[in-house]
Amino acid sequence: MTVKMNSVGSHDRDRISLGEDHEVRDWMATLGVSEDELREAVDAVGNSVDAVRAYLRCP
Figure (cartoon, rainbow, N blue to C red):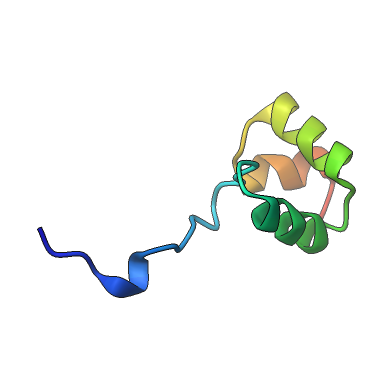
């Protein structure tokens, strides 16, 4: 099986992953929220970036 090197380690920018500390920090900075606010939003509406933005009322 061939692995594309540019896809290794990339993450889906349409979904919020709370499994890695650096991704949590990136999403906190991107959305301008605390970790608790981010986790609450994902718990409430799922990990879709659009749904979380709407929940948080972020542009």
